[in-house]
Image (cartoon, rainbow, N blue to C red; front, side, top):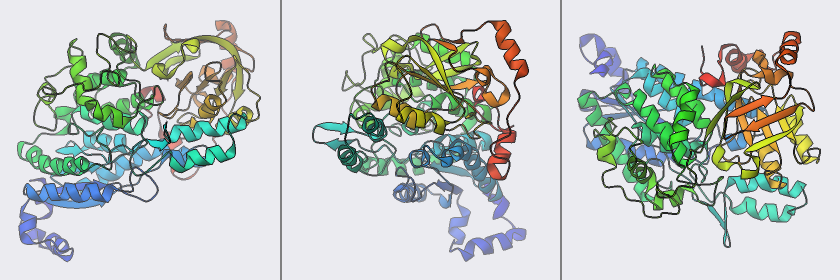
Length: 552
């Protein structure tokens, strides 16, 4: 066993003494040591209950003959960090999470890992660590939040963000917003729509790194506890058989994940995170594969923000396994791939059934014949940009409008709330990329304000930053190269005509190539916004969004 490094032989008597100082017995030390990574904290609603999940995991490990050893990692709530300097740390925390797990797991010679995340950057950070370490591992998340209710109205966090814009536009009173605030998020769990957290929890199933049900069983259901116990038991089987993450995280697994991503209409951040996880598994994802998969994959689900349903509805309709079963009818998935169940994906979905054909459309009658995400290229985004096509109004799929240029999210948000953005405008927010931000902030506040004002069918928003999975409308992010690297977005001028053509995968600035070249030659990089501390180091080391914003 790997753990023999810290517990076997006469020379390891000091190591055993230290374990015994914590109450471990000789019998416990004879068993495999399983690291249980707990990201519980009191700042993320999706993580407030994770101690309950972790206890169940440890029970499962003990039942199956292992010794659980719990340790923790950090987490950031994207909602609370939104629209202020805190959002600079959100994406950057993903790398810290992966690095910290690597540090503890190797330093203490664990035989296996069960990782317990739930929200945005914690899930991919833990999966990146799995791929990097390549010791037997399984993920079990905390589960989605139930949707909020106000009478017959179904609410979620997005309802509150959009409410801010509605109040600014005079379409809602502050008292009405307060009522929504009180009931939009009724309890623990990852925010209830198909936002980034739930996207990644669902895709963890598809990658094969989590048990069926991981993405959709609500946080407050007892079934979630049973799933956690099963994950604890299953890790012992993976250790015994030496089934490691890279046996599971193959190129085919990532193609499956992108396929289900398109069918579900996941967050645009999923592209960023899948690319980063693949990088750790030494697999390259080219953005062009996203479009090729999207072109052949029908969009079967329209969950919030793209539609009226929430993850609890997807659960009731049969969950991720039912979506995969539907996709398998047209041979869109590789079903021979190994998963943490010890079985193939095909075996996992063999008994899956779609129970609600409106939440999960039949593959013969999809919401759209193409997937929920598209990659755009063109003179404004030579290395690519990403849009959640499923959440774009039909009126905005093809659009031309004048650029309204801002060098920060804060400037743009102020202009939107003060009514300075007009129908037809294309809002451009730059210097918010991985390097420029630094940290590649999410832009949920400006996009929600636009939607709340009723302008989501008239105004586009482009950025080298990111968007929340809760974002809807013609919101195009991850524009690469970013402004701080001298990408074309750095030289867009106020009033330049911007052309968006999502069906054709194009994003262009309507000036001549010669003029664009001359502007770029004259451009000089501004001083970095942050030079010190973790963000300063992050800005110096981070790569492009087109390659997953991983560190060099």
